[in-house]
Image (tube, rainbow, N blue to C red; front, top):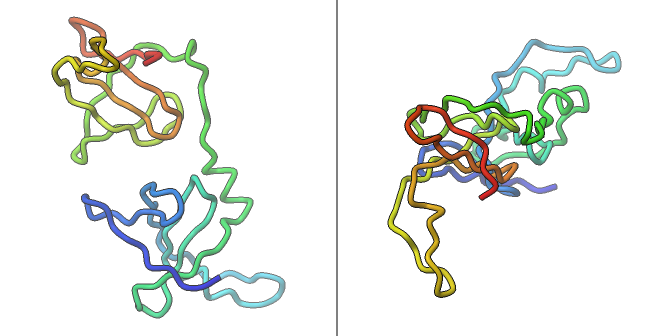
Length: 157
């Protein structure tokens, strides 16, 4: 496969060219021996896309990256778990500096959606965005605030 240029998002984090999710940075490790040969590639840093199961390694500080499949041993560690919605208790969720937080259902990063006015959709009022809530782009879960508390609960929409 050819070299790929990786773009950054508004928060200056690198994003996957395939799926658009934020890439996780991993420092280079120790020198390893693979099939009786020294593997120096393991010492180089890389950007990992957990959703696609690939990682990107920069070629000679050029700004261009080679793409490789994530080894099976690492892929199992990064698989998303998905808890059934009935097993999710009310949870305190708090926005971090980037305006996101971890999803209680799958562990991915959820986006915070601020409250807005009532919208008219197909001639009917839509009240779904009139209160602050979190939306997970991976598992499509929505967590709405329980009135009068600091807790959020999973919601169907």
